[in-house]
Image 1 (cartoon, helix red, strand yellow):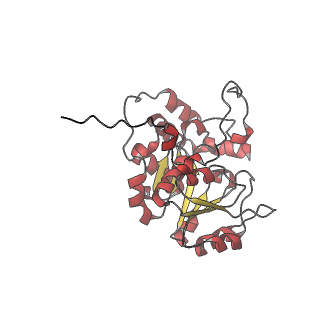
Image 2 (cartoon, helix red, strand yellow):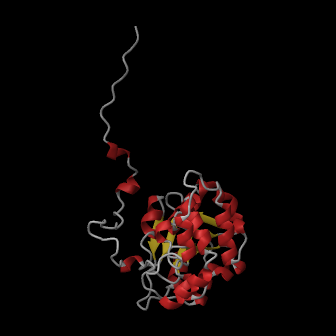
Image 3 (spheres, helix red, strand yellow):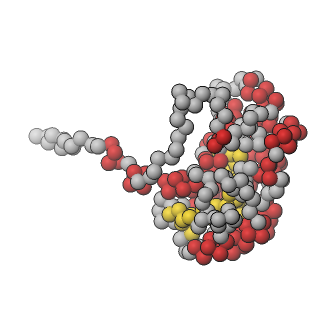
Length: 283
């Protein structure tokens, strides 16, 4: 005689949620269109008031390949971005915004208990994102004048430290850090140092030369700010070559960048004179 299956008690779906996620403070969300009309100026978002370039707008308007998947490895976009910053295409990872590139970095590096060092006040996504992946996010605060506490950062590095993030120019304080301070961190940290350059085009300087002198440096960029493509969600990172075979294993298929976003980004990169004129107007 067959036995009846054992009945399980009803499951509370909340019990399935990872403890680290249950303990997270909710990320501040946009209140929604009913409280934020589309034409409101959201100063906290740092959105370009000039929008996308004419060529990018035309590429979006003329886009006819919504039924087709993008390139599996996003090679055309990666190659164009590489040409823009002056590196090889096989050094570039793309994502649906810089947040997505940060998430890919977390997938690459972070096991539960690994340490990530940041200096607050800074970009508010770092802490919740790396905490979601089980990272122990340590804040070495900026000094009262918003400069980096370099000795404190280097003193906090231990055998659990996988990553230091330096946002330069820093969001939300708006200042740039002393190049010598940033380079000292890169030289002495003994872990990956990611320099978030979301606003590099407005600053007129870049940490990319540090990658030639230090094999542990990555540089993160976005098309959201200078190219006015925040709604298209196109971010990218330039990484040490030795990490790229592993990054390509964790970078989402298609680079997580939609086909229309890719078209807009590619068109923007052919309209740099216009974008430079916008930057000059803003700065």
